[in-house]
Structure formats: C-alpha cells, structure tokens
Amino acid sequence: MLNISLSEDESGSDEESLLNRFALRYWYIHGYLSLVVCTFGIVTNIVNIIILTDKSMRTSINCILTGIAISDILTMTSYVPFAIHFYIRHGLSRTPEKYSYGWVLFFVFHIDITMTTHTISIWLAVFLAMLRYFFIISKGKGERIPNVQTTALIVCLIYAVATVFTIPHYLTNRVVLSTTTENNESIYGLKDMGIGRPDPLLFAVIAFWSYAVIGKLLPCVLITIFGGLLLHTLRETKQRTKILRSSSVEQRVRQHSRTTRMLLAIIVLFLITELPQGIFIVLSSIIDGFFFKIYLLLGDVMDIIALINNAINFLFYCTMSQHFRNHFVEMVRTSLKTCFRYSYNNDDIGKTTTTSML
Image (cartoon, rainbow, N blue to C red):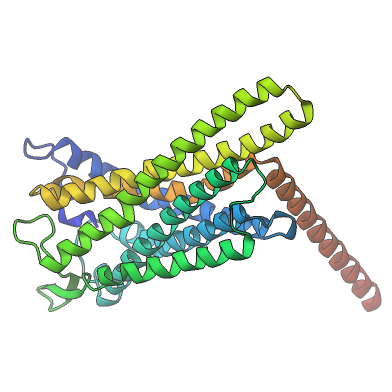
C-alpha cells in the first residue's frame, strides 16, 4: 500500500522526510506484527462470542458486544492474507507476482470489507454507549432499554445499513492495468480517482467525504457525548453510594460501575482509533498533497492501531468483568477435562488393542 510513497532506497537524502523514513522502517515489521495481532484477535473474539452467547450471559449489552466481535473477526480474517502477501512474501518493489490481477482484486475486496466492518463496529459502539447510558438513568431497572431480541434486531439493522452505505465506495475501487514489464508481464493497480490531487473525480470526493463524516466523525461525536454522560453519571452514582452507605446497595452499585468503566474503556479505544482517521480523511480532501505525503505514510500505523482495537476486548472482559472471567475459567476447565478424558480413553483403547494382538 505504501509503494506509491516509499522506495527501498533509504540513503538519508535531504529530500527524504523523517516521516518517510519512519514509515519505511515500520513497513518491514508491520506484516509480522499485524499477523500476530490478528491471530490473537481472531481466537479471542471466537472465545468472546462463545461466552457472550451463553444462556446465562445473554443481555442486551452482551448482544452488542457479540456483534462487535463478529465484525472484528471479519476485519482480521481479511487482513491475514493481505499481510502475508503484500508485506511478508513480497518486498516494496512492484512485481507482476505481487500485483497480479487476482491479488489486486483481493486488495479491492479487502478495502471494501474493512471499510464496511469498521463502519459497523463504530456504530455498534455508539449504540453500546447510548444503551448503557439509558440503562443507568433508568436506575438499573432496564425500563427504558430494549430487550435482547429487540437489541439483536437493531444490531442486524446496523449491519445492513452500514453495508448499504458503503456500496457507493465499492464503485470507486476498480482494478486497471498499471504497467507492463520488459518481459510483457502485466502489473495491475487501482484506478486513480484523483484523491489528494487538485482535480479529483466528483463521485470519489462525495464517497470520501460521506465516509469521513458518517463513517468516522459523526459516530465519534456521538461516542464523545454519551461517553461524557456515562462518566458524569458514574461520578454521581459514586457520590450517591457514599451517602447511602448500605452494603447491599454499595455492592450492586460497584458491580454496575465496573461494567460501565469497562464499556467506557471500549468506546474510548474506538474514539482513539477512529477519530484520527476521520480527521486525516477530511484533511486529505482539502489539502493538496496531504493524502500522499501524510495519510499514506501513516496508513500502516493506523492499521495496526485499529487491529489492536479489534483484538483487545477479550483482555478488557477478563480484567474488568468477574462474570466473564468465571465463565472463561469454567470453559477452559471443561475443555481440559474433555481433552484429558479423550486422551485417557484413547490410551485405554491402545492398550486393549495391543493386548489383543499379543
């Protein structure tokens, strides 16, 4: 992805910017680092889904978290072959093997699926912040929040609307013949829509801006608003608990506060990940050269931050939710018992077979 802006030659010339040198050096570790993060994230998000969909864990909040986990798995599953082919197997040079028609077509698919899943996840984070806030102001009785079935329908609706919203963006990414080598081998690339240049295509600009506003900036604003409201209610609840001084009330409030803090951590991480991307997309549209000189050079860094955001929720759940932690420990214990039982039975069968043969 950075081939447009980087070259293998790192001679340290005056023309080469510090940012360019940083991007070049990071490029060589990005593929391996992202592969580790994706592997961890895919496995842990599968565990998240198994635990969050357990009968005793089925709540409206956990339904949204399950939706986020599914979206994160899709993002990281797409990133694995992308990282292996474009970063690990091939260098920075443009070769027919690296930029074959099939792989550039996959690159287009990867861009489209990633854009869709990011839009889904951030709007699910908005829904999560709103739902938790309404739950708290209803004093924990759940009077103003939808039940699990209704929440599941809203999650599915967010998936559908986000997919429809990103369809116009799919049309801006087209595979074209970029160049032909001396051996008459074809190298393919993406059609230049003029983003970052003085005369971009109107359709590409509209798609670019709509994604920046609806897919990034607007949900970040909403997350900030409801995150601030959650933080305010959390402080109010803490003050109220000090006044009541009831052990049963204090224990219940402490449990609700832990859950709220965990959800706040999740949505703040979304904010840290998505807001800079939204700002950079806007700047790429209004400042000539920003897209190539800044945005593309920081693309890999923004990618790894987003992947960490996709993969880290399991750690939040384990450290901040005792209920989730207990379920995880029980799941591991049950799995180990099953494995040992299976191994023991196989040993018995092997011994019996050996005895029969003798």
